[in-house]
Image (cartoon, rainbow, N blue to C red; front, side, top):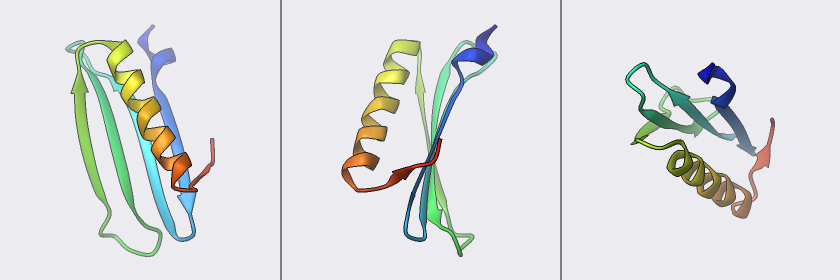
Length: 77
């Protein structure tokens, strides 16, 4: 079952949030969805990046998580 590979990371700093989702769709494509914004605003943004291989998607997620950590975001997983 593919579900076990889905990942979700929650990062927070002050009133800002950053979420990372790794999902596998029905066509066999891996999607990394980044969602960020301010807690008190509805003007958040998102970006979706597609990968053919799980290994490439998880490497990208790891790099995003490292950036959040370097920018002093707190992980809420």
